[in-house]
Amino acid sequence: MSEGHTHHTRFRIPRGMWDAYGRVTDRLGTTRSARLLDHVRADIKAHGDERDLADLAAAEQELAERRSRKGGRPPKAG
Image (cartoon, rainbow, N blue to C red; front, top):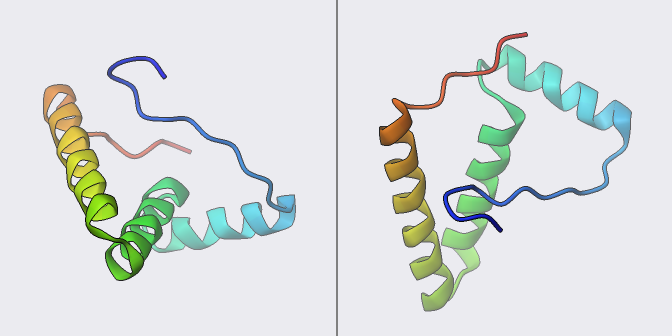
């Protein structure tokens, strides 16, 4: 992974489910990425051990620092 970049990952999901999820997140005024990150955070908080929680805290700090340098991350258009 390149320094200064978030991890890019891929996973398999049926196209129709991904498309429906995109429409749902649009209606909620958010993005698929934001909702997925919220879900991952919730799982770590609910089921993580000390190491997992420490990694989450470090990751949240990394995101906050990156976004402050960039002036935040505007939602994608379209």
